Length: 208
Image (cartoon, rainbow, N blue to C red):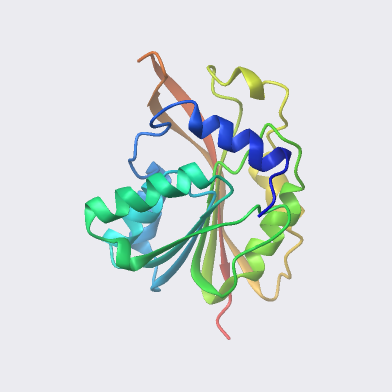
């Protein structure tokens, strides 16, 4: 994949530190996934693999995709260390120009925000198309910029309702399971304890 601004920005982000994320699963995925049926998951913007690895450890077969080669290399190494590399296919995609093939029982997009301009609604509409009949689309967003994310304070953070509206889904084929906001405790880069607000959108595609 030829580098562009989106790729370069995220490659620099991951290359700046030996590890960017905690490696732990995102809280909303851990709470919601056990309530779902299905076996095949797609993790969009998988980063260093925390969610994809957790899903694999809980019986899912996973495709994890990210724009950063560095992030994907770390994800593969972590999956191998946890013994689930055979259940995960980590693939590089710039979601502004391409998308993984296949259909999935769970398509998960956690914090798919970027400091580089992208047509996020178009990506999420494509994500919905990848949901198999009977499957779900899970979108978890920041309701506002984390206090330490100085580069994102000018970034627009849509409401859960606005995200759903932007998907423009066929009401005969989809049902809204939830679209709300939740608080969670988090720890910042300097160890500070903060409360963050996440928007949680869970949409179900009707069975065939």
